[in-house]
Amino acid sequence: MPAPQPLAPNTPQRFYSGGRRILAFRGLEPTADFDDHRPEDWLGSTTRLFAEDGTGLTVLADGRTLAATLETSADEWLGPMHRNAYGDDSGLLVKLLDAAERLPVHTHPDRDFAKKHLDSAHGKTEAWLILEADPGAVVWLGFREDIDHGTLSELVDAQDQRLLALLNEIPVQRGDALLVPAGQPHAIGAGVFLVELQEPTDFSVMLDHAAFGLDPDHAYLGLPRDLALSSVTQTALREADLAALHTRWDDGSAPVRSGLADRATPYFRADVFDGRPGEAVGDAGFSVLVVVEGQGRLRTAAGDQIPLQQGQTLLTPYSSGDLFLTGDVTVLRCRPGLEDSPNTQMEAGS
Image (cartoon, rainbow, N blue to C red; front, side, top):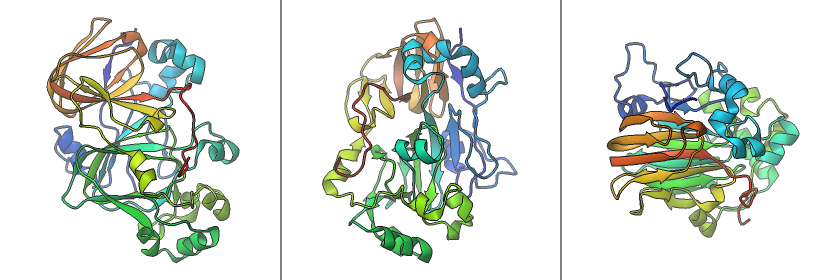
């Protein structure tokens, strides 16, 4: 039976800069050839980059990709309930993301659009759990006012700062968590280091692409421009809507607590395992663990004993059974969604 496996850095080259905070978090030094364009570490990945070089797959200790392993050992890794709902699809991609510069304003298609136009069961709802943020750091999410398709089209043609100015600007600090529904325009500001959970695709409609050197085929997912823009939510995301998406992952004293809004559950789950109040216990299941601070120990029902320290990332299979965490340590346990949760296309006001 597979045991929990440490995940080595998996940092494909991207079009924007970053990556030094990922290395520091993992306790590593930049190599002589580090190119400052390794801003994402893909964890538990069965997903390839949509553009650039098509890399991104997680490779396990035996040299096989996780994707190939799930084709032959899905019962052990995913468990029968997950397989009954999703087959051999893990349903999850987790990243460490270090934004050394502002990311483009972009959106991701929802499941309905992806099924119809991209031959995929998954869109790309995502969530951000902030680990570090420079003083004054911000992110942007959703339009402040309704706009129509014509206005959106004009702003995309202009490729200037007016598009960013129409979004809700949100100051962030360590401990903040934001759910980002598919379709909502958003951007991550410079100086933010986070754990991202998402549906397992790399579908992005880059509304703000010229300054980043992205060609239109990449920017619009290979689709006709107006069709790609039709996936963008054009209604405002107002104060009450934002409040429903914004939580704190580091608040609370329970050994196990949720880090995200309930509306995330059909897509993914992020549980905070905190060994300081006492032993944190989790049920068996496929998950990605990110040790965000401290030192401790992970024990599994199958008998594994794994010392933990900040910066480690691990993949846990269903076959390891229940998980038991002890010590002065905090771990984010990232898991696939639940099929029987109230499914929503999480548009503003829904």
